[in-house]
Length: 426
Length: 166
Image 1 (cartoon, helix red, strand yellow):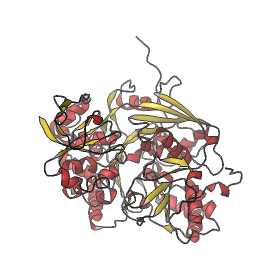
Image 2 (image 1 turned 30 degrees about the vertical axis):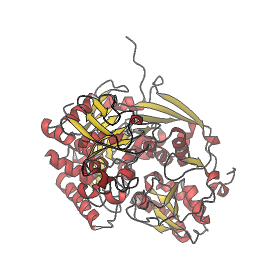
Image 3 (image 1 turned 135 degrees about the vertical axis):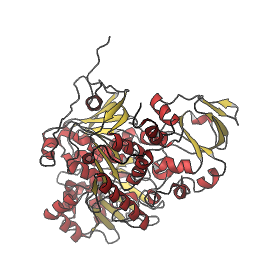
Image 4 (image 1 turned 120 degrees about the horizontal axis):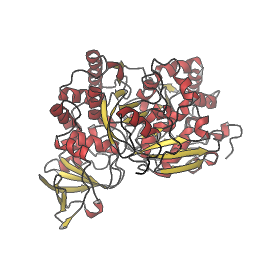
């Protein structure tokens, strides 16, 4: 018999949660540590639970619903869906994060609902965000979410993993967002379908926990089931004081088997922009510089964290947003808003001309907070630029880092942010 | 059971925002009303074309990429889409389709033209292009998914077994 090789992070977490010796390709029924839904998906999950005849969730401490995508409600229909979610919370004891608390993908880790080594599912495709925290987290639909809320478990196919290593160091003005946009351009929108991405190397080690979350957040844009990283001292420090759960970090074995191994020199990567209407339609910023913009967006589950606000504020300090540009700013959570107020970033951004909206998804999903007009271009820190994504099929969305967005809203056109950084050469 | 219907063919990388835009999905839980906007970004007349007699949605690679919205397979079901045939699927959509009872078939869709009449026997594993007089091979569903689809989706599976019986 051929001895089985070592395991990837994904294989370790699925082994621990299924009580099996799980390897890529296996189908397992695994225990989940947490289940989450947002306001676009929870209502269908609640209805699915009703249709199943299930009246209780498996553990009220391990289920949450979050009002973030369309919040505060812009229309009557959404108000009714929000009411349905509040009543679900009262009925089952599940945690409800109401209007103004923030984006689900910030709240779930921020409130300590998951810790390294956990397995969780969320009814939102960007649930892969917490892979940066060594959580195998993945997006599912509402019926899968309902089944997990009812049973505390779900079936999974253990994915193969692609190992991505970044060597070198990020140049000034270049961020983790640029790395993941670059990777989307390299691998394409289905480059990692049915697989997990596993990120390694000194560049990942050097990133803040927030910067890492930006990368894992966009794993789904390459089709991946998860975007996993090791938990290091920074990760564990980030969880200090966030809850009672004990982290159980899962490192990959040295002889883990990967489907592919890719290495990139981060020093050679500059600011990247995804052009309309696909996230893998990526080019270096030089190719799109000068494209006029009517709206800029700072926020979302990709780049709405304190570090992102610090970067934008450092560029906009003492400067003004271009008179022909709307600059919409949405902190990813109430806590981030409070921290950004305390640090002075909100003052700086609002003085520069930003329009601050409620912590949550902001204008990303096209339901409110800044639907672009016909023919307009938008530069956004979000993760998707599909046609019509922001609510108007006749607008054009470009994606970039918080620095790129900040530099662009000053000039009213897509602008290379490196000129604002010492040593930020081109 | 054999389903017979016309093929309505589209391209690669059709994302769930195109299948049902976020601006409609957040309005309500009424799938019948939302179905009228199915595939609107790519084909504003999809609902009118498919609803009366039903149809197969035929696409290229990575069908259903993007968001986890289950409204995507649901509006296709409510617009009378009998099955989705594509070269490959994004994984969340694929699970959602099975869970909600929308058949999905991975096959070489270059062998199908827009407007061709197709016959699909999912259980029997036979897909015929009646117009071209050809048979298109496709791999069977993984056993777990075949069982869920046979039970009528995940909700029915739960009702029948009182939980996961996989």
